[in-house]
Amino acid sequence: MEWFEYLSFGKNGWGDELASGLGITLSLALITLPIGLFLGFSVAAASVAKKTYPRLIAFTFTTMIRGLPELLTLFIIYHGVGLLLNKIIKWLNPDAGFFELSPFVAGIIALGLVFGGYSGEVLRGAWQALDKGQREAALATGMSQLQIFRLIELPQMLRLALPGLGNLWINLLKDTALVSVIALNDLMRMANIAVGSTKKPFLFFLTVCLTYWAICIFFEWCIARLEKRANRGIRTS
Amino acid sequence: MFEVLIDYWPKLLDGMSMTLKLTFISVVIAGLLSLPLAILRRSKNKAFQWPIRLFVSFFRGTPLLAQLFLIYYGSGQFREELTDLGVWWFFRDPFYCALFTFALNSTAYQLEILRGGLQAVPYGEIEAGVALGMKRTLLYRTIILPHTYRIALPALGNEIILMLKGSAIASVITLMDVMGHTRRVFSQTFDISVYFWAAIIYLMITTLFVFAWRLLEKRLTRHMYYPVNNKHLPAPKALNPPKETCHVN
Image (cartoon, rainbow over the protein chains, first blue to last red):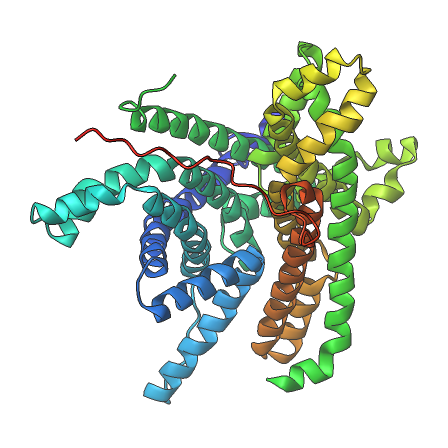
């Protein structure tokens, strides 16, 4: 089979290049996840705040993120933040050279914003579904705000938010393919390079698709197990 | 900031028509395909169930960009065979390839939504139809499908918005939609504000769509609203008779 030869590891095959691309894809997703989650919690906290301004900011942010194509967000961050940083650097130090935002960092920021915008909504829904009496009871026993959040609200919120967050995680994994457009050497771009030199586009893009598919199925299985574990204390009919 | 808009608005408008065309055609094709497939997916026959399951899982588990590359560039590997079949003109054109990919992708998503909708139709309604001696087609047309679409409508609206946003990916295979024109204008002028205008265009389309979709939802659920003009109706009598006070103590 000549197809396997193309995918083999070593000098003639592209297996090792694709594997390194896969590593970049996965690390991008794994680094983005905590950043996006943190942003999501902040957005959720802002959107249930009593004051008007935090709520307005959170609403504008989620509406923007959910209305813009992920590709456009990525380009705005990659070019826009790069230009902005350059202006700041030029203003601080007129002799400084041109600074280029690395595509990896741009990818993390853009995907983190997207994840934060969507997960903010999921977490807000979970937050609002909690029983208010528990919070009042905790306040009455003298717990601090941080303790209430960490010991009472967070564990219950995660159970409610898990299905939504799982979907978002799968989406995040799939969206990482977009960073290949801004020349980050992820799985997709490695396949592109391989196609450029071997002229076997179907083989390599099929490999990419199957790899993503396998990753998604694996994580879907993980999420199902997590959900089962999170729901272990819930009585079902 | 406004110079870009003044200089390039015809291009952005052109891109907008391309974006709308791509989204609209693929969503409509997917809408037509997804219903029969969703009904087949629910059949007990494993020979129907499994291929559809695989199809849905594949298209929902891989990035749209990878699917597009697989179909547009991947078809090049079978150029001779496709030319012999007489379909090479289709796979050579980026527009048709994008349409094909988006339609298949959207079919997978819409199929799952409709499957959920079909499942959520209360069984009593179907039983009542059967008890009245309705045939299968009549049952579907008058009872199951209206209810299914009523349940599925919000999710379908979300899916169409996702498709609209996903269509920006078509710019990667040289199609000049809003994103494609924006990228070209940026590479010519290095003016970041063109991205701002593109964002405005996308937000405008989504907002208008959400508004229109809400009207459609209202129309399909009109039986759940009270008629506004009911002044001529007699005022309802008190349903609950005044409760007798109890004297326990």
